[in-house]
Length: 191
Figure 1 (cartoon, rainbow, N blue to C red):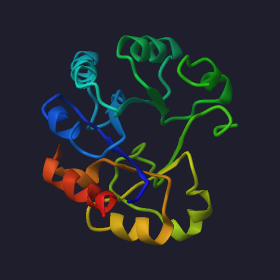
Figure 2: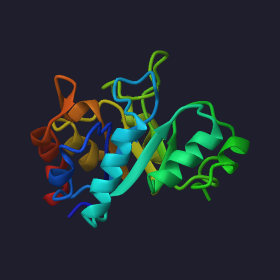
Figure 3: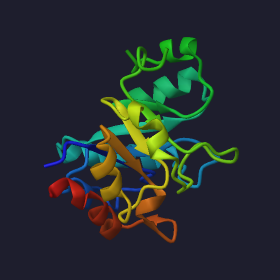
Figure 4: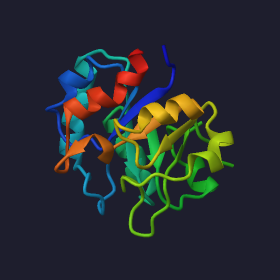
């Protein structure tokens, strides 16, 4: 059985929570980046947090932020009982030290996500990067993201065995999360 951690990012409402808690995933990401097509408001985030909490699951809840005011990050983190805060902008080490949920980046952070660079987006582009070029970084506490989907996840796991993977657009159909695609994505973990 593969030990690669799985994060499903960009959950926007509670409709999939029941299904997701039955699957072998480790993290769910909710997005507070206003410019993102996966942005959710605090009311929707609260509903997700409460439903996830009521399931008494091992799945950890991650809030995505980008250059937000530290007080807002801390307020939402505490209000929603976020397990982790994912910073997607130009936050400095001093900024990171002011975030209550965070203990240079691997020294100050629990995890790091490697994603494809885009001038127009902070992730979720559906474009992969050259895995071979960065494979020495795919160790513990590093998630690989960018362009992952049910068709290529097996190749990534087989050839590079990353500690974790983070998927968003690769498990969507017409801009919405697809439980079928999510199930297809995680099949590698059950083999």
